[in-house]
Length: 68
Image 1 (cartoon, rainbow, N blue to C red):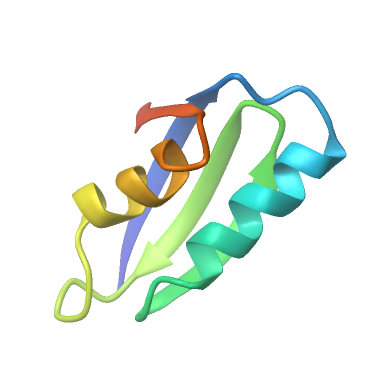
Image 2: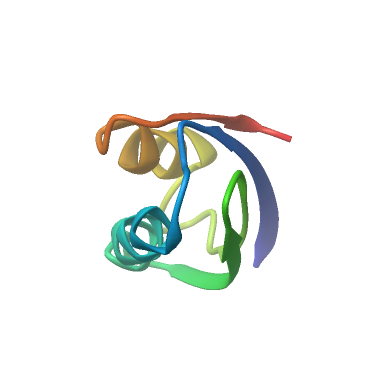
C-alpha cells in the first residue's frame, strides 16, 4: 500500500467531508485514513488504482484536489 496526501480546495463543511470520503472509498484498492476540510490521507494499492484516479474522484465532485 502507498500513501497519498491530498490538499483539497473548495471544501467548507462536514457535508463536503462526507462526499469526499464516499468518493475515495468507492475507488477499488483504497483505504481512507482521514478526511478533513481541506485535506485527505488515503492508502491505496498501486496494482488496483493510481494517484490520478483518486485525485479525479475528488475533482469530479467540484473540488480541486492536488497531491500535498
